[in-house]
Image 1: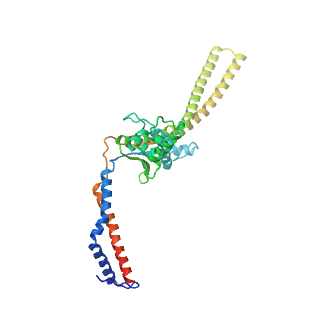
Image 2: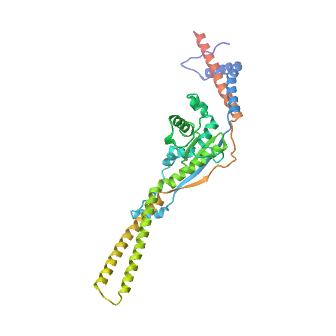
Image 3: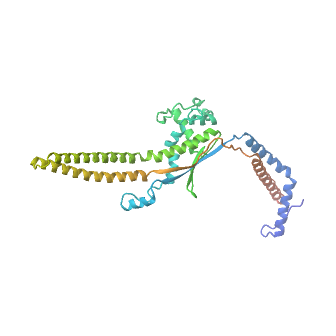
Length: 350
């Protein structure tokens, strides 16, 4: 076939159409070459579909809300006790805490309800992580954690711990993922593991530990302060009642008589009661502030849904992978045929 001639500086529409037609005909004549490029892609993606493990995807969805009504918060804010909107939680803080080692330690070294084994060891067994670790050091062969006390780990256990954390939460494609939907404000703890029980354990226990941290652990100091002033308020109240009773008893005993000792005792008791009432008023006020702070800083984690067995498993679609293989193979094959024609024409012009 005569090669297509056209002016590089001024290509007409007709010449462009003829050139495109020539390349299309070249591809059609060499369909078998394109097919040869498709075959290895087909083999790879079919093998990938047949040998890829089944996974069990699940998620926990929840909202985080403050526990103090905005009207009360605004009123107390105007009095200098609290600020309106102070009960709002930073969503990035929640996500970072959920991914922290403090939370992950509690999750990974917790016991699974299905086999009474640490979740960390269930992950190691399911994904045979000890085989990959043993390629570097033989002591990792059939490795399992014997305790969840990270502070007392030896170098071998610590290296395995860091590798496990990377696999679960810090790598590019982690087993567990925590994020926030910016459109609706809903947090999601998601996991897609090769074991149904493992998926449920990781998602639900992560949510439970994060909820516990923010609703209980984070406000321990506020609760202790509240308890101290609560007890102090009650003790002052009891002391005021005692002194008032003593004063009344003193008056009854000295009824009808006026003595210097009686007057001194009544005056002394009256001064003590006045001081105790003033102290009680201050402590009661401080208790109300501490009580407000304890409630205002405590977010409420509202569970929307959590996974339950059975979970519908998912596997890679053979049909989708076939389309991907044909597309990629055809793209590479057509590219090869076109480039070969361009090369041949360039060499023929010389």
